[in-house]
Length: 535
Image 1 (tube, rainbow, N blue to C red):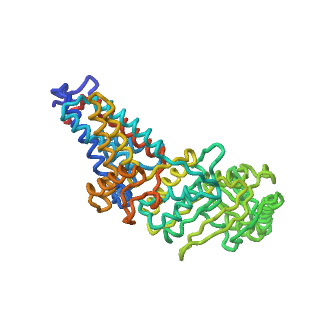
Image 2: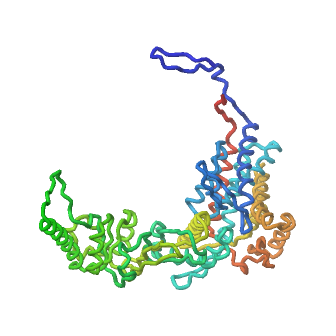
Image 3: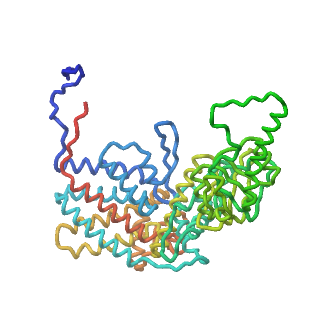
């Protein structure tokens, strides 16, 4: 390596052997790629299921995340290898599309890669393995469709939705109060869902958290929560049937914009000026009252004198409310944001059935609840917890539950969890393998074996004997031809997932199999890896 200078005096480095890039070809490239994919899957394998372990990740600036959500773990991990990045993308796409099953999809892909490696060692061409996997995934997806069950629910009877959300939450840190959280998630989704179009806009569900209290104190608010309090301590803490003026203009007398200075040499002149200001402000308050407002929410602040006057004129006010919150309040209450005082009219006021201020614990922390709004499409889930990490993890868990409820509203089919669906698919794929005459049948059998890895990991994480448990459940499914038997992770004493109420969404499971197969096919088709040599 030598240092040289160009004609402008800028230094540049001359590298010898610049063309010697590292290169892996053929079977070595595939083996290296498979090893990288398996390494990522191995990390997540222990986080699968209700007894899965959590991972603790420290960010570059020292912030700590504790989670067992597959997508979050892989997002936070610093991954260099390109194939490992594919696995991160895989769990992210499952998260965007379905919202749940992010750990399972990576475990599944890892198992498929492990089986593929055995097929390559037998001398089967990688393309044939990939084609066999493709056929097998089609068989599995069709079989899932056959064993799935539809269930009916409506706004009054949403028990099936709650049961499915509880399955999602049982693998999270919040599983001790999964019943109440699942109900909150389902009620929130049903509040904003458009059941005719079968569509749910999750942006209308705001998730707020505050440290303190118990997880059990988590509540669903049909309205908006604002982290502010009334501007004067003596203003009423509860306003019923509120008419809200939402202002983005300053609520105070105008300051002189020019650089003139006012000389006041007598007390009378000062009194006159003070009265003038007071009168001006009085008119502003009166204008709000004439329009019919019983609460003013302002984006800017106002001084103590203004505050005092508002208090005396019986007009409660909230100051320093952020822009995003103002917009949400406007959507929920059906009001309009008023940029100029002159434009305030009765038609622009928002309406809410109840606005109340609530204080927490022994601290001076207070929050405003705006409930029973005119447009009840906006709801807030308010999470309490012992520490910040707990609240963050609960937010992620509730997001998963919301996504599951949304998927069920889109497609009402469910399959049984606890590895039951995977075992049923494995048996179906294994039976279908004999129908294919070519080398692909080896790959199809390998796919069936890979499907067993999910129930195997569930049994392993639950402290059961993995191989014994899996073979017992498998033979039970085969004998009785019932696809509801899965791994009894919670030690209830029965393998029947219908009795345990362990459900998963059909589209979530299908997506897992399809995404994992696509990624594995992509990895198998790479036979040449050219990377820059490190210097």
